Length: 262
Length: 252
Image (cartoon, rainbow over all chains, first blue to last red; front, side, top):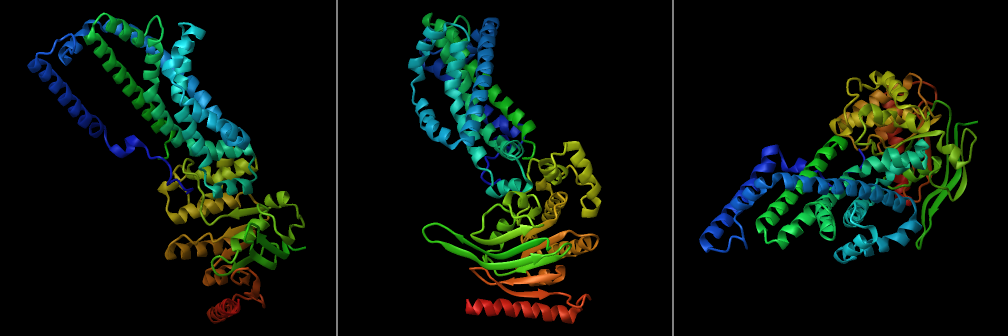
């Protein structure tokens, strides 16, 4: 077998079965919520400043339709943004791998792009592209392309030199080596990058909305904050966390289907 | 014309401290012949294979396969089996064996699979078509790698210590199997090994190489009179090779 020791191992595979994955963090979560509830009860803190979880849950349930409407917008932006980001990142990684001069020219700039304060740029993007989908896609891509690009490019470069030699002696073209050796070999790396990227993606979408949008959880949180509805702010935040987690799990499921040899 | 001619070939790797790896190597293999090169570890045997396979240029000398000296053309006249099986973990057994047909022959996947399937019984791999490399034993993986190479149907096979990583029992079993397989219409093959018994057991002829820089110290024919060597003769040949190795080791 070709050397696979350097490959990132599947996270879910290592943790074990379903219950073993879900139960421990759930227990901690329940403990945190219980402590929070008790603290609000005992300290006598203003319930508008810090609403107890029971009140957050109640508010979320009462406004479930409104939350769902805004969620749909944010989910859509996140998915479209991620797709654009993945296409961009994968193309970029292939380009970096294929042409050493491009790699030398672009790599420092890519690293530099990660130091850009997106917080400051986002309002400008709204100014340039309006309140529609475009600035959200740009923000999500800025946030998420880098880990995907780096992970995939690392995978492409990490192929066993002897496997390359094998392909040469078989008479493989460059394209055959890419599609039959390098790309399959890099898929586990790609998914590692993706898992990092999706955890940022929804936060990036919410943040982009915060800077200007008509609908979406980001703008909803902003409106609720301005009207001192801390319970609804917290409900939306929890929802964002749940949705991000769902996206993370989804990537894991897709990985299991695609990377079947692990 | 011999199938493979290696004539006065030397190889020195450049760099700040040049390393002379091969010196004045002359080797030849005829059609249908099984020839072994035996030598201590790190005597440049693998380098010699890389030169023959045209993936590395020689410093001096001439290498021809079927009279063809151009490295790119030569590369497609040899089937090169590496020390590592180099099976792709994402491919099943049948698809790993079919890799060469798909790459080299540009064969469609189904056609390549059908071609592989015909050969599986002979290689003792029937019933394992859809297993992935991680689910196969070392011996099976090595047979898949050999099948992948053989299916290319190239005139000359280069076998670079194909059994080195296997345990002694599996190695013995594969050697026997390889010998039987070869008896029934074998291609010409050049085997690199540091296992004297393996070389004697499998070969028509053996070249003994000295330590770095690799040189051909001795050439031994297994059956000069055409008959199979008996146990006594085989032992005598082994002894002769052993002595050649030792002598060269002492004077180098």
